Image (cartoon, rainbow, N blue to C red; front, side, top):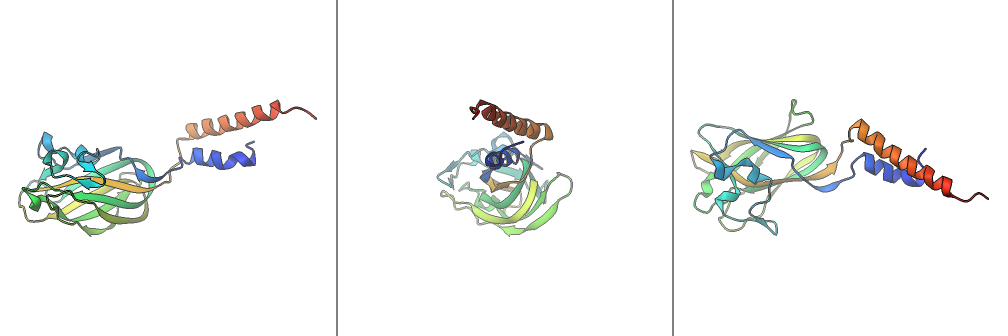
Length: 201
């Protein structure tokens, strides 16, 4: 049995205590233009400094919009989270600002199969100077997967892109049962070892 004073630690360990920025495990795009515009640029922090994104196209993602009337991005967060916000930096190459995304629909899923719509959003057009993110509320939805359906851009008939995407929220998933048992067993064993070391009176 775990002593009461260790219960908060045990619960935290089993529930993967977490609050704040969520590291994204992977992102998949319906399309990308070429090796300069990989979707991985959206989650690797390239081009970001002090919360602002630069205007170098090699730090951004871009798709061929003619082939994808609704471009799609799927983000895997690696576990279930209560999602508060997503922070989205628009496409910001100063020579082609009309390639930036204007409207998108965000959907979320716990299992990667069944998706629910969070809402429709609009993004601020890039300026070519270092830009900050648009903060889009996800309303505390519980999800592991987040899908962006990009539905329009700022005028370019051929291309559409973004610079960076981040999420924040709180971990809501339990680890695998075997991991949970190992954590609790370790805590219980440590507690028993301490009790046995106490001098008898």
